[in-house]
Length: 445
Image (cartoon, rainbow, N blue to C red):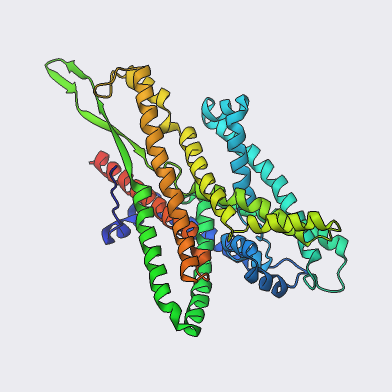
């Protein structure tokens, strides 16, 4: 395993503005982020925001959701659903594409046209999920005492609010797709990244206030921050580590000169999915807990059913042991899933291409033996990456419990992995643009 982490230098930052199209991409990305943050501050009409904000501060599930919506949920803004419906829809469409042959064909064989069709299916399903989540959220709000302002027609208010929240979710999806297409970075990940950053000052303020009241927690805070720093270091290692498989290329004689014969390598990333397994695992886990929270607010007359829902809600809470066990298993599973659908991590296709060009792995016959050898390498590499990612995701959360400093739990390992992963992705994309500019300059000379 080897990793190279090179942070951008001052010359790199200065040359960004001269790279082909990079300046426009960065400016466009900032404009879209500003538009998203503006929408976060626009509340839905007819709702007492203070009632729900106080509840979000006390409810772990709602507080966790609020972190990833950039505070939009706590403010009950038009972007309250955030990027959640789009992320959940993407998960379901990608999972279903593996099971349904026609969708798998669209993904793997029909190229750009097939991917566009899948993207359209994802958008349509996002609308359905946004409507469903909006209805669930508004049912929750109507059950919350004092959340709805007086002298409001509840029927008309319910319908209009569902429409506004659904439209807001679609607008967030549109902004994320525009960033991905015309800006820099992955739009969905970047929106979550900005949302997490906006919540850091609040968590830091709460921690300072808590430590100021209890000086015995100061040593624990130092230990917790050290764990956070070590976690960031390991995240960078995990994101950048690769397994290099040596490839021997054949020699070709053209006239009196011999070309080729140089050994190259195929790099397989230790963590092929990046931050997406983390984001998808959270989306999968928070969906049932959100529904259970709403059901728990309903007037259920059956005591046994009400008790069962209450315990199930506690078990799946972001502070429960069951949640973290499921979280770990989902991260491992989704990392393997991402590795299985990555175009550059298909052993059979790689083996076929190597055989076609006469290249081979030293000591392994071309064709099926190469495919089997690559499959073993990928399985071991992905297992190490998935296990490491899962452990990294749990360590800071357990440290928060040990030190009894839970005010920073919102920016725990999950948020750190997303922030560091998105930052590294942005740096790599900027470097790709800078490299392309160097090639352009070389060709012009």
